[in-house]
Image (cartoon, rainbow, N blue to C red; front, side, top):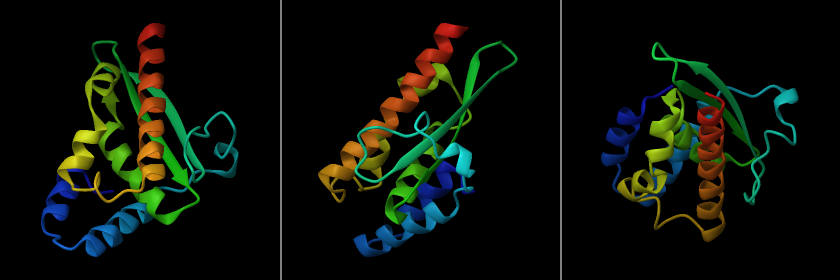
Length: 142
């Protein structure tokens, strides 16, 4: 899967919103499919108009700090791409960094903030809040 810096570079080459929209859909195709078992109520993200599932795993780094890895899926093509963007930003990061990172900065930088419907923007916020909540939980368990 493309790294966040590569995604940002690719977006900078696209001038037209339609091209950016298609690229977001292409990003969604990079997501590893979640198992049917992972499409469950515990993994479901509340507050998204489309169905979104996030699977979280936590491991410890050399300093015994929690690092979170996320996998995700959605039933909508464009939302799968938005999930992919959020995962590129947050997955495999320390819990403290996750809590301190504002996903909307990325969406503004890419120009997506002004092109997403209010429902999709709320869905992104719901995904981010779920990820931050998982990070806070991992820190409390430390």
